[in-house]
Structure formats: structure tokens, C-alpha cells
Amino acid sequence: MDIFEKCYAPSLASKLKEQGVYPYFHALQSRQDVEVTMEGKRRIMLGSNNYLGLTIHPEIIEAGVKALEKYGTGCSGSRFLNGTLELHLELEAELAKFLRKPGVVTFGTGFQSNVGIISALVDRHDYVVCDKENHASIYAGCQMSYGKMLRYRHNDMEELERVLQKIDGKGGVLIVTDGVFSMGGDIADLPRICALARRYGARVMVDDAHGLGVLGEGGRGTASYFGLEDQVDIYMGTFSKSLASLGGYMAASAEVAEFVRHASRPFIFSASIPPANCATALAALRHLEAHPELPERLRELSLYARKGFTQRGVKIRESALEAPTPIIPLYTYETYWTLEAAARIYDRGVYVNPTLPPATPEGEALLRTSYMATHTEKLLDEAMDIISDVMVNGHEQ
Image (cartoon, rainbow, N blue to C red):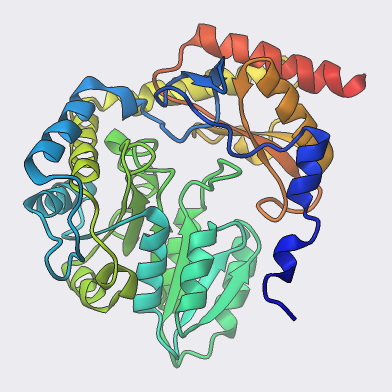
């Protein structure tokens, strides 16, 4: 059998293209902002993770330009060898101070961060315990480790306890959860997770890719939101969302960070974050520290959108109703209707992200909408009117 045979077979993607509802790879022709030019037309952007709207901020752009001029376009090597800039060390030090964890290690991407942390820490006799709705990068890290992965139903603390009770106690246990779940926008039940971890001798790692800049004191994340910073052992996060750049990090004790720095294959064998990306992430972090009102403005707009959709008769995922996060999933349930609705909304000038199984449970396809601190109520009303007309009225046609 030719290994390429699968590549030539009819695919779902080709069928969706024929039907005019293929939703991926729309090309931007402008900056990532609340309004963008995409394929020649103005679109209101409700599908970005640019939560604080900093990708177009002049200070952030200037920091990237200066880094390009000083350091060039890339580092041409691993952090382990010739690829460490003073900028990397500066970014790690300021992140450590901001997150109140003494040890920080930066990675090339967020995906690489989860893979690099979990695969370094979870050994042959260890266990990693995951929420079923965790990000794919967490599962990739589990697969790359030598340990045993166990899963529990989404935010089901009774099942998490049953899973922990079954572990034989011979190896270490790492509970890994998203802080803010990337598709549903709901928040992990960290108080009960930490309590169970203490009871059963486990450690806790939180993927805060969608929590940094969004929740907690000054945007410090999910653990800060719950007042549990001293009970979460590892924070993982990214620079590609609230910090307007590219890359990822882990924050932990100095000893854990030092171990991962010397044991993580994705860290050791990958080129380091390019100078411009490092500088823009650092500038965005400093901007967040100087403007702690940004996460509060984001929360206000997110609540405004939740109320607006509810008033317009659009079904929102129930678990997201009370979560003060900028991710609002709109239920469409059926796969084809999800794609058709996304295409109609896109044609009328609003970009949203259709989310299908296996990214969601079967029968729970949705349109993922996300918000920025730089949106305005007027712009959101325009977008919500279009979306509700398609979803409420269009589905009845």
C-alpha cells in the first residue's frame, strides 16, 4: 500500500469546498484588529484571541521594530546553545515577577510549551490526569511522555476523585487542566481540583493560555482569580493571545523550571523565540502591568455580548453564562448547519469560528466567538444583529 493513498482519497474538506461552506484559511489583508479586511471585504472580527487588542498598539509594534534592528530576524539556534538573547532572560524575569513564580522557561509556541513541560516531567511510572476538554497540545504532551494518561469528564470533580483513588501510589501524579477552556469559555473548578490534589498527593498544572490577561488580579490568570496562586504548581501560557506575539512559557518553582530547562526535548532541540516576538511579548506584558483596567474592560464587553445574544434569542452554552471570559460559544448543534451559518455570517461581514467534533462533543457543534478589550458596544451590536438574524431567522427558512 502506498502511504500517500489516503492523500488522494475524497475528503470532507473537498466536499465542503464543493458545497461552498469550507470555513478555513480565509486570508487577512490587514492588521489583526476589531475590524479587518479579509478577502477584499470589511469584516467585524469575532474570532481572534487578541484579547487585549495589543497587536496593533504603536508601542508594541515599535518594540518589535527596534528588536529587529538590534538583533536581526532570528537567533539561528537553540536556547541551550547560541540562541539565548538578553531579551529572553529579561522576559523570563519579568514574567516570573508578574506571575509570582520564581522560575520561568519560555518556549517557541504555546503548543510546544505543553508538549515540552509534560514530556519532561511525566516519567515511566508516573500518571497524568486530564480533563476531557483539555487542549490538544496537552494530549500531545501526554502521548510524548512515558507515563500513563487518565481522563475525567469535563469539570466533573466526583469523577476526578474516582480516577485519583484508583492510582496505585507508586508513581507521581500530575493533574493538568485548562484554566479557561478554549472552546467552551468556561473556567476550571480549580478550588476543588487543588483540594483533591492535596488529598491525594498530586501536583497541579494549569494551561492558562486563555486566562492570562483575562482573569485575576491585573490579568494574572485563573489561579489568581480564585486566590490559589500558592496551590497551583505550574502555570503554562502563551504569548500569542493577550500578549500579542508568538511563543509560550511555564512558570513554576525555580527547581522545577531548572529541571525542565535541562530535560525538555522540545526546548533543547528547537530554535529560540525570534527577537521581534520576544520584544513584543515583553512590551505587551509591561503594557498590561501599566494598564490593569484592560482586563476589566474586556470583562464588561464580554458580559455585554452575553446579554445581547440572550436578548436576541441566540442560544449560548449554558456553562458560559456566568463565566467572565471573552469566549462565548453559540450553539448550532448540527455540523452542516454550523458550517452554513458560519458561511452566511461571514458573507454578511462578521468573522466567527465554526467548531466541530472532535473539538466539541458529538451533537454539540458551535460557533466560537471571542472578544477584545478594544471592541465597542456599537460594533458588537452590529455583529450580534447579523448573527442573530442568521441563527434565529435563517435557520427557520
